[in-house]
Length: 191
Image 1 (tube, rainbow, N blue to C red):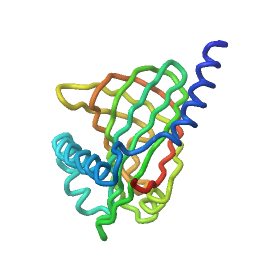
Image 2: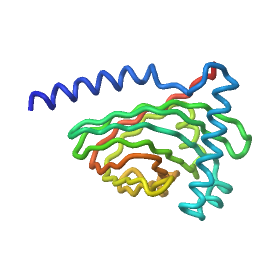
Image 3: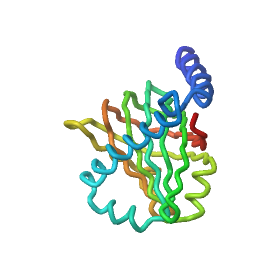
C-alpha cells in the first residue's frame, strides 16, 4: 500500500512537471508546423478507414482537434502528455495545443493514441481551444492491430450528446483500464 502511494505521488509530480514540458516536436516554428501537418495527414485517413462516417461528421462540424498522446498506466495510477491542433471549420484557423493527463484507477499498459475530437457545439470548441479541463470516468480497452489500432471505450469516450464526439486511433501498445482521468489542454504558441 505504501509503495502504491509513493508511485501515485511520483506520478502526480511527473504530471505536474509534464504540463510545463509537453510541447510540439521541432526546434523552429516551421518544423513544428510540419510535425502537425504530418499528424493530420497520418490521422485523417486512418480515422476515415476506421469509421467512414467521420468524414461527413468533420465536414459538418464546427471544428475538430487531432492530438497525439503517449500514455503510461501502472496499477492505480497513470499519466500522459501530448500535442496537437484544433482546426476551426468556418475560418480554417488553427490553435496549437498541448495536453497532459493523470489517471486514477485499475489497469495497466502503455500506448500511443491519436484522439480526434469532433465538435458540434461552438461553445465546446471555444472552451477547448481556450484551455479546457475535463474530468471523465470510463473503461477503455486498446490494442494495436497491424499498423494502426482501435480503441473502444465507455464513459468519456462517446460524448455526442455533449456537443462533441471522440474517436481514438491506437498506434502502439496494449492497455486495459478503468479510470477517472483528469485532462488538461492548453493552447500554445509555436517557437
